[in-house]
Image 1: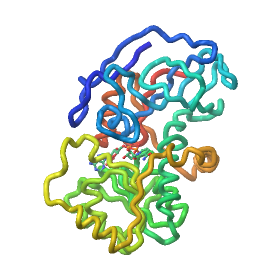
Image 2: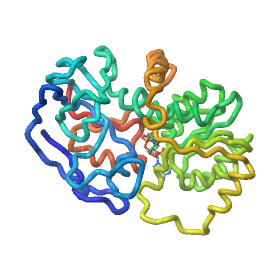
Image 3: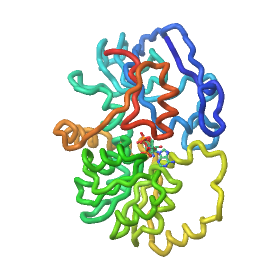
Image 4: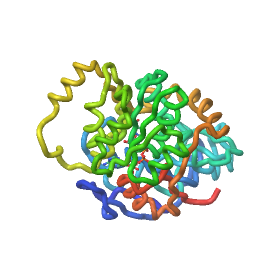
Amino acid sequence: NRQIKLASRPHGTPTSDNFELATSDTPTPNDKQMLLRTVYLSLDPYMRGRMSDAKSYTDPLQIGDVMTGGTVAQVVESNVDGFAEGDLVVSNSGWQDYSVSDGEGVLKLDKDMPHPSYGLGVLGMPGFTGYMGLTDIGKPQEGETLVVAAATGPVGATVGQVGKKLGVRAVGVAGGAEKCAYAVNELGFDACIDHHAEDFAEQLSNACPDGIDIYYENVGGKVFDAVLPLLNAHARIPVCGLVSQYNATDLPDGKDRLGMLMGQVLANRLTVKGFIIFEEYGDHYPEFLKTMGQWVESGDIKTKEHQADGLAQAPQAFFDMLEGKNFGKTVVKVADV
Ligand code: NDP
């Protein structure tokens, strides 16, 4: 049983020294457990937070712990009611080949599902996040302007496409011309701006002639700086993630702009609301899955995956995802079904 463990805490950008590839005996399930074999491992930005011991919404990993992570797994043997050998499930098995589970929080996938790995992306935690944050906090109204960065990732692509269904003007922000072209031509964004462009703020302003009513916050940093002056009165900001800051070791240089930000919150009567998906919205998952399942099946909602091959590739794929070298939802193919 190969396992990737947290070897040390990163200071800033994580490196391969922070991980250790270990092997252990394959675990044996007790009479209330099942044995799961990992097929796909999801890599997500939140994992960077778990590697640190800074106070957060959940406990950090300890040194020597197996890296945490959502997985699609196959049941190898089962003593849990409702799960049988051969079933495919979404579980939280982490960065390892085998794990045992009592079935808590494990979701059975349809055996005939054409792309089981979608259970980690568009039909799983990130898709659910984009859908709930946009609809419940963003509250889109027809004709409004929505901006979202990391627009081709699993959260942003969901936000943009669901926003279009609800009648907004969707403006994406992504890293590079190829991602921006995909966002417009495949995902149906009205415009997409490359945040690497020198005149990024000006281009964003030009793409939002009526200002911004919803800024779905995925990244923070210079994207937020460019968005702030464009916000309309009563704009909503679902604060989902701040990936540009996850490797930061210090506050950014420059003037303290907190006063200016709070002035905007007041003058424009902004709604700024953070959320952690399963904490706030867990009960809504079945209804999301039904709706999104139909949209994905009909081709109404499109999705793209960035697959790494083999468990040993997980750390590098994780670094790449944090830097935007992924193109679509990052998953690691650990084994064949
Ligand atoms: P992605 O797969 O889209 O990967 C992250 C992307 O962020 C990169 O591909 C890159 O895209 C972009 N990025 C990285 N650095 C920067 C930067 N400095 N400036 C602008 N963009 C940057 O991630 P997800 O879709 O899985 O997650 C998106 C956000 O949602 C993250 O912040 C994540 O933490 C958050 N999240 C929050 C949840 C919650 O419950 N609150 C649950 C799930 C996710 P590009 O090259 O296009 O810039």
